[in-house]
Length: 267
Ligand SMILES: [Zn+2]
Ligand SMILES: [Zn+2]
Image 1 (cartoon, rainbow, N blue to C red):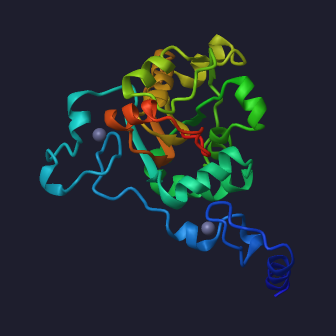
Image 2 (cartoon, protein in one colour; image 1 turned 60 degrees about the vertical axis):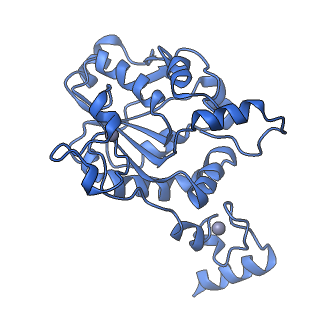
């Protein structure tokens, strides 16, 4: 009752707005996102490719019993299994933007809950979750690493095993190949772990990489290569969202169009 009254008072006097859609929040104490935005988050629809977790168009085109998408049938990388909780579009895009770029760290809890819902089976027998690191400068500017905020709310020990060897330019507007080149050899084992300690923790273990958005998967793949080189038995990946990689036409149009800088930064 008291909470209801306080919600109503805050809503009328301060009229705080939803950080994703800007509508006035009826229950501001429940968080910065309105119930409508949460309800509009679209999950990755089943059936899923059992490796990368992408939605498959229909059961008819799956190569039963493998249940793999065409890309995973052609090539397997260092990430053994990946899953995402939702599609990077609409309200989830707005929610993640508020989380990462507007410093709404309180959103880490509901977003981590989404990850647990989508990837509970990947976390069940995992030895550790490993957040994808930010470069120290970027982390300092943002004030936090969004992947770390998510990782430590998943109920599995968090192992900050990786660090960035260099500050890579944002992946925005890059093709899949350029994204891979951009992050190649960009990660190493954290210097805060001694070599012996790192190997003891990683060798023979099942680790789950955690990030906010997966687009082409290049960053997660580069991290997985480092963890596999350190002896990880299996590397899985969980993200809040799965973004559709930009088509070559879209990249060409984006590079030629003379337009002001986008208001929103992409993953
Ligand atoms: Zn909203
Ligand atoms: Zn796949």
